[in-house]
Length: 264
Image (cartoon, rainbow, N blue to C red):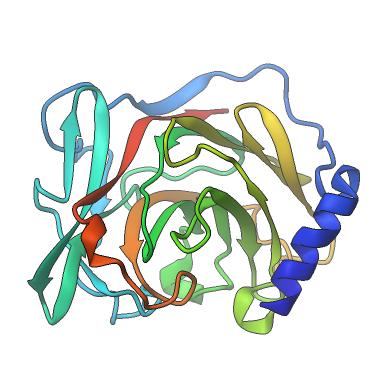
């Protein structure tokens, strides 16, 4: 955690170093998208759900039970609503949803754009992120993780961008990470984007480059991002990053997704 805050502080001092440009292709086309403009449930040809508490290996000591129920994940007015609720289920005190393209779609390199409005309140942990297709074979963090956007309610509107690999990850305190205040992220939609190539990953908000992770040629233990990754959208309550203090007065609370678009 000390490393995290030091890194963010250095980023403010030298944003040029933190946000280096990579050579991203100029000619790209839309290859996959969801505009959330049909029906009232997420498109099952595009999205799967994680169900349960994550105690089988994919959780982060969170306090919610993930469901595939309409009240936790639905389409309304051209948006995907991921809603966390104060209710008991599976020995947990909250419910929410975690959608992922695992088994449906994955990609190696490209531009990923997600327009979203984030929830407010102590205990919330919205995230837009990616994991390697090979996670069942090699496990985490060897599969690689790209955090397109994370925010926690105890630090409202502070957006976190990170990558994790075998050698560079949060349990070791060596993750590549940066954070910055986006003053109205919980009140208005913003477009969270990465441009990903073999050379590196650029992280953007509303087309403004914020952070870059470079492939320094040290091998897949440092940069495993040369193989397919799938996309995840979720709203957690409590856990390792936001802590375990939750303001129950905020519920129900939602992350709202306008669209997801992938270009290659």
